Length: 212
Image 1 (cartoon, rainbow, N blue to C red):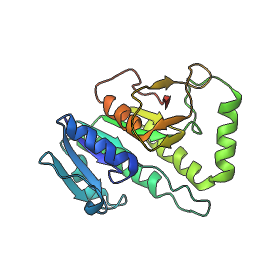
Image 2 (image 1 turned 90 degrees about the vertical axis):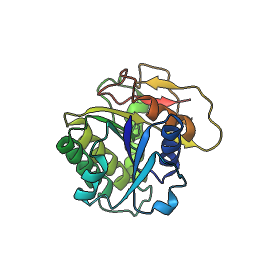
Image 3 (image 1 turned 60 degrees about the vertical axis):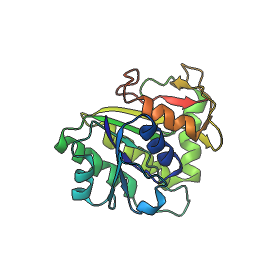
């Protein structure tokens, strides 16, 4: 399978690229700085560009079977603007133009899924996120909306506390108030979950919360 990865130089994105290459997929990594990618493989090509560069994004997704986005907003209280939202809109537009249907990405439980049940956690998370990181929450809502309101075949994994270290190999996935999903998950397991969605239709057009 040919997969385009956005956010490929981030902590989760690099793991996604490594997992894809280990599974013998052909990978196109869209990056600003190829030197930060940390991978060299005959099945890996890079396209260098910004999230604002519509033509380069379209080039990166052309001929792909799926897109995995490990993009996320800056968790800084003083950050402004919507570069990740705008970039995600450009990715969705490029996928539609190039007839690439499968999109797999990230968000947090601060952005609800319609399958969540009303719980205290579901109510508190957006409030806390809005107080601590208002622009980041705005970005998360914007990038998620860009995908969920499209006609793409999407899955968005909602994560809360990514950690470093060895993978645990266990995954809880589901919806707030309905399933037993915690908060902590290793980045290695998050990456593995994203890659697994290439062939798993369980959460097609859904945004499960995931944890170890």
